[in-house]
Length: 261
Image (cartoon, rainbow, N blue to C red):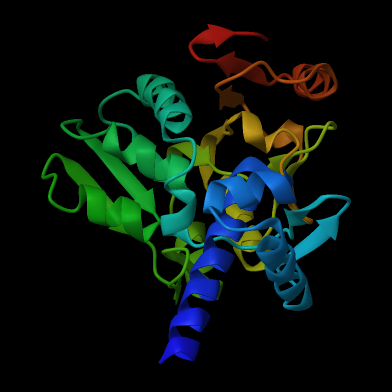
């Protein structure tokens, strides 16, 4: 019985460590020890185990999370106020009667919450967006087909891409894992990239929703370049190199309602 309890407690600590690293970036052993209320020696053992499992990399005095897919429910708890500020501005771009394509991700979900009571057509592969808007009778809701990614509450695959080839939207609100200094939009999950590219092709205007943590953020797979974007909505000033790349491509950068470019 004691052994079982010990295993459960260790698993819970591991979840909390990964959540802290993914939301806050690299952390020192001492900081993690204080956050979790356990000894530094315990944290060090946890970090060794998590590194063996390929979930983080130990660095001098602490650790950083490996790039990868985070469950939707975990990401949804991070930077909510910042995402809501971005979503509020994005919602103001849309006129009643228009068609809106919402990407996967938690910022798109926060945007969906801003659309209640509007007369719109919303197209999405985001199951949480679908659930949010399903009972709003003023919204024509189109759910794309595809294979369900349960952890991230999205639909992907050739069926999703084929559906998008038959549709056209006035607006696409695109999510990202990171934006490189050259303005390239990146994603951590290769399987999502073809769907995002199909969304871009199906849309008249492309708006990237990216909070401050997405500059440069993470991601090994390129979704598109800055030339594919019309607007970037963020919640903080964008670093000079990235802003210059976006401006050169003719992208408007909007920070909490203030236009930078």
